[in-house]
Length: 162
Image (cartoon, rainbow, N blue to C red; front, top):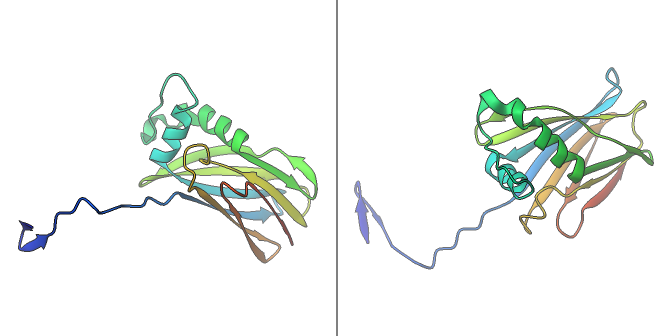
């Protein structure tokens, strides 16, 4: 046992730490913008790892002064990992920007939708290639109704009706 400021800690080689891999997104429909506006949160280190696994010149995330320099990488990754159908029609998400909050990066995405969606289908497989335990949650609020989509290694596509 080790002492540290009056506390006693037991040393053990059998302690297993399990890291959880989850992203959380919130999406709402804006009548004014005629779009589904989505805010996605990723841990900076996880996003940096998946992007660097895909490119030859590694990038460093976390520096607020250079965040716009990494926009092309963020946009490219999202375009490959997020696909959306609104009322049966393929719709291309638009990456609007990002900002850092503590150990997370917040991504702002807009998905065009002329009318209030009746059905949304998404394929969202971010980080699955790096973390088998990855789960991606998308909470949607459309026309006053709330629905949640859950994506993981076994389910990369989900659909909800409003």
